[in-house]
Amino acid sequence: MKRWYVTVTALVMCGNALAAPKPCEELKREIEVKIQAAKVTSYTLEIVPAAEVQDPSMVVGSCESGSRKIIYQRND
Image (cartoon, rainbow, N blue to C red; front, side, top):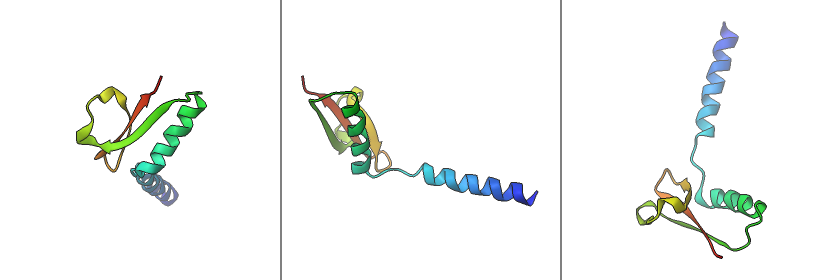
């Protein structure tokens, strides 16, 4: 029983760590890797305050607890 309690406690603590928000620059780099893997050559990724987002369909990421957004625009 004690072993079960320790296991559950450890999983709960790990879950909180995994849910921690990522820094904007780190998330932007991860998104860039995925875009480049899809062979997109001409695009723009920009970190902007959430209040400045005009087109929600351009948002590809959220950081700093939702206060900033990463927007994507393909430049064809």
